[in-house]
Every structure is written in C-alpha cells, then in structure tokens.
Length: 432
Image (cartoon, rainbow, N blue to C red; front, side):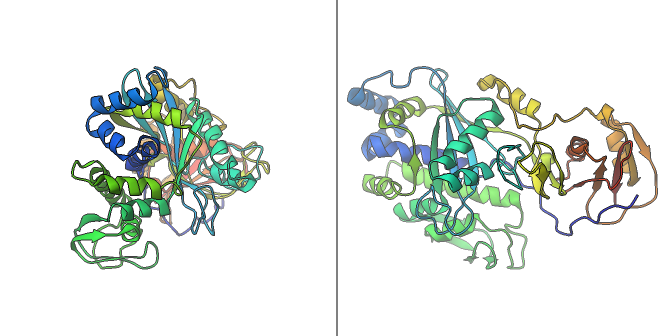
C-alpha cells in the first residue's frame, strides 16, 4: 500500500482551558457597569455587606435559585472596531468559556471549551468546522449572529442551555491593564519574540503596560537563546500569572476606586453583552463569595492532524479540509457535565467506535503495537520500519472514526490521520 507523506510541521501539544482567569476578570468588570465601583468592591471584598447593599437598591430574588449559563468569548480579531467585529484578521472565538452560575450551591463552574474542537456544521459552507469558527460564521451574517451562533453550537456541544453571552477582545485585555496603571511582573529570563507576539523583555521585576502584558502572555517562540517561555504549558502559566495580578490589583483594598471606575468606563467599548442590568445584578448576587472551580473538557490526547477527506454531514460540501483538530468524545463530555445538568452532549459526529471493533496492522514500533493491543485493539504486528516524524494512521475510506479512536488512544497530539488510497479490511499504523 502506498501512503501519503505527512506534513513536516509538528504542533506542540496545547493545554486546554487557556485564559480561565479571564472569566473572573470579565465577570468582575461587567458587573461593575451596573453596580458602580464602591458597591462592586464591597460585593467582592465583603460579600455579605455588598449583597445587602445591592438588595437594598434593587430588591432580592433577581435570578432565583436556578443555575444560569453564560458564554464568555474572546474575539482574536485584529484592528477590530468593537468585540463583534471581524477586523482585519482573525475574528474567531480564541477563548470559549461557559460560566455555570448556581445560586443554590453558591458555586461558579468555569467550563473550558477547547477552541479547535471538531464539530459538524451541515448547513454551512465551512471547510474547517471548529467550534471557534461558529463565531466567525455568525459575524459574517451580522454582528449579533456571532455570539448567537456560538451559543447555539456550544449549547449543543455540552448539552446545556445557554441564553447569555459576554464578548471581549484582546484590545480589551490591554485596555484593562492600562486602566489600572499597568501591572508589575517578574520576568525570569530574557524574552524576544519579534515574529509572533512582538515581546522584547529583559529579565527582572518591571511594570508592563497593556500592549507589553498582551505580548508577554502571547509569546509563541522565544528567540533569546534560552528555554524560558518556549512551550504551551509555560504560556498558560504566564496567562494565569498576569490575569491573577490584574484580578488582585482590581480587588485590593488599597486600590483607588477611581481606577476601578475608569476601567469600567474603558471596557464599555471593549465588552458586549446581551444581559440586562437586572440579570447582571442577579449574577452579582449569585457570584459574591462563591466558590469558583474549573471544568476541563478534553485533553491533549484529543488533538490530531487530520488529512483532507470526504466526511458526509460535516459541512455543506461533505468534505473536511485538513488541519489540526481536537476530536472529543460526546459521551465523555456528557459524563463530566452531567452533575451540572447536561442532558447529553452532541458534536454532530459519528460515534467513536470501541477498540475491539477496529483491527489494526502496525509497522515499525513494537511499543505502539503493544500499547494498542493493551487498549483492546485486534493488532497484527508487521515489524519492518517506518519513516517520518509523525505516527501515521490510515483508515479504510469512509471509516474516519477508526482513525480518531486510534489517535486518541496513542495520545501524542501529533498523529497524522488519513484515508487509505484503497479499500482495506482494517486500519494501518506506521509508527517510527
């Protein structure tokens, strides 16, 4: 069997749940729109006193005891005129987080949605159908359709209703830093990334303005000759570090309320929501003093390099364009989110079959053959050798889920998954 040569580029495994701290900052600032700086600080620093103040203003029982789900979106558009703009590039939902606010238990669950999740969009002409793309597709129809379509698909993906959204963009993040007078960060080693984030920082404790802080957390390659900030795990740590500094500065008792007020005014143009003042006040009441927890969907094992191939129902063309995707299991999503009220996750994809249903022939690595056999696949080890940097997985034409299952089992986040050039009885794996 002849096989297709895989792409040379290799993507580093990406951690899910990026920018979870942004959810907290967004909630804090958006509530400030209607509460005002003093009440906002009271509500967060002194929950009981703050709640009493809000109740005295608007009365109790604003949202009742039923949980509400709010979709938090960060638009990665460049030069965007507002958060619901396509700008000159991007316009995708770079961050998707569902804030599940439960007033009865006083717990806010932040559900991290992997932005590269493969979904079916049969009604749309979308060659690379990822969950983040729903926002872009909607924006191409109208500004309001961006978050509306994203809510529709994320709701289907997690099996939970979503009626409300909050959208910001990267400029909004930079503006937030500037509005509080910058943040003090300890840069451990030299950072120089001219080709991507534009970061150019020397080591040491220093105050970063908004653009510098944005560059600091978006470093993709460090050309300074050291291994500081060179992988996604370190980048995630930097994001959490900066957002925590911003959050602490916002909530510190020594913070000048005028700075919080300025931030609220600045972000009025950087944040868009469909929630009414009454709803926001209700969320403020429910989140004050609440426990916050993070819920992760999927992991790096779900990431794989899918080749272009026919895929009935995936989009209008019934053809998937090759790219890196996160292929999640709907059953696993349902299991994770059932305690929060999920009635059944739906990605619109064919189910991932059990290993026992997929016969596999392995060329090259005995270790890979043993791993698949241990996982329950009927394995034939053919010995020989395999070339290339990636594990190559070939499935019988029309059986793409077989490739997904094998790639998820091996879990390197870099498997090349492609259809075979001819019909065959099982899958074939080339493992260098």
